[in-house]
Length: 575
Image (cartoon, rainbow, N blue to C red; front, side, top):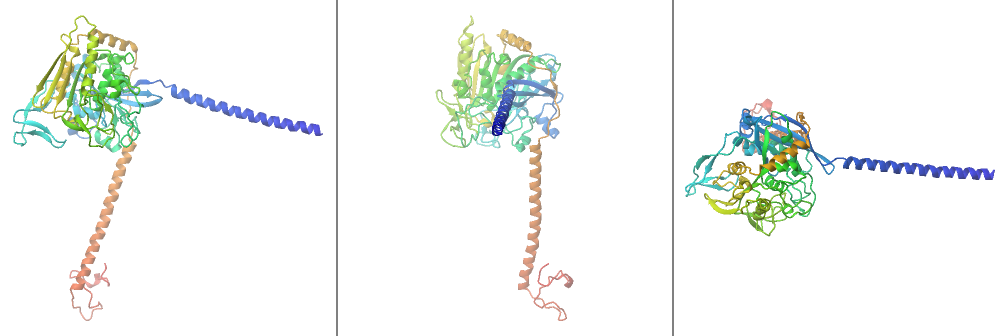
């Protein structure tokens, strides 16, 4: 019996050990399987872009007056909204771009102008602010030109205009633009800032402000614009993180529109990329990748238009912190329109007042060989204007030297009007590689560097579009490669925009707060009036004495206001 019991005990113990090992092993296997599934799920998402849908976009503003001011006229062409999906480092974002197709160019061929908005706003807001559709459709614009007796001044957004020699306001000579026409315009939206819902459609400025949403481009600065953590109080200029591929987004837009097989989109002849402020910095980064095999669509770019973004990101200029060094592989035209002569704070932390450097108040012009900081909450170090401009000029020279009829560019510097200076580098018989810089001094960031000597957009569009593309073989080969790539599936119709519950909550919160405040004001205001009336009457009691009828039960020292009868009186003086 003892031996049999001992045997049973050992058997039970062995079973327990077996159970523990078995179940423990199964747990480990399950955990490993879950980890493998998660890793496969994350890394199985290939970085890139995919077109999801397209729809006709109607005016988003509430009144006809706003629509006429901020939206292309219905009879001038059609606005389309495109929605795409971006996968970047395992995360998925919704990306949007709006396209205006003039009525006259459908089923024909036309240039494509991609214009990038500045920081905090989106593509729709840029469409309303810049109105490039007016140039494209031949409506043009009017602007005031400086004369000896009436010159432009700028003090702030609310205080600007024209003054005569005595400092009095005056009416300038009105000029009408004569910009090129017949081009398709794209207004992409940068990625909404960290914490924002990327699936929401871009909205007008007031709606975005109520929602607390801003947009930026990944222009190469560090920390990443709109995504750097605590950048105002704890800026880290060595933060290498990037959160989206905006160069790839521009490439995706070009490939999508070139591959589009519909009567609504003309054949794309060439592509011009331009931008203002954050969009101007992004334009330079895009230009640095022209000819890069990773982005075949960028090979269609023939010109860059850079507005109030005098220098490129230093990371892009030197190839730092994971950003590719600026190295264009194809010649192109480049024009800068910048402001100078305004003291610009040059600090690594936003909010400082000194030291300062020359610039437009936000973007520095800079000095060659020195780093200067952009003065905005997004911060970031920039290369100087001359270094940035000469990067593109040197690339053009290097590429064109391989041709048999190469001529060194001729440099010219000339004054234009009262405040502007033009620096040009012209290639004889190779005008497609010219580089130019228009600097207004004094010039200010918040009015796009306008100084009354030339119209910004007319000048940029003429420079970028009014020339013969002699090097057309590169364009043809780029277009053919894009068409063969079959990058883009046919676009479906986009559904109605999703409800912005954050905005709804914000509006209800504001309305509720106003309601409570108004109710409190009404309640306590009424109480104050009643109490003030009571106190006034009590004060009168001590000053006046009225003899009452001896038969009255009312005390003789009680004051009765003249307009009240005895029945309304409450003994003690309170009503």
